[in-house]
Length: 55
Image 1 (cartoon, rainbow, N blue to C red):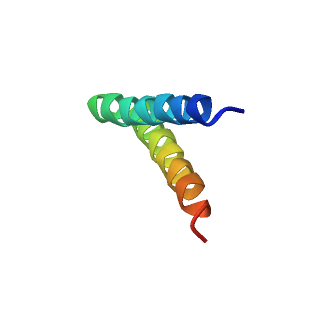
Image 2 (cartoon, rainbow, N blue to C red):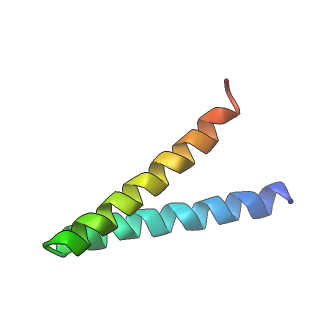
């Protein structure tokens, strides 16, 4: 896979994760919490993928 395409996919995933966190904050209850946790998990996966190159 091309490096440019890979970076675009990672950017889209980042934007979706941030959107999940922001929308999850507005929803009170279990659904909002679940959305925030999914967004946080996505950000942690992206951080792991980024840092894996520098081990």
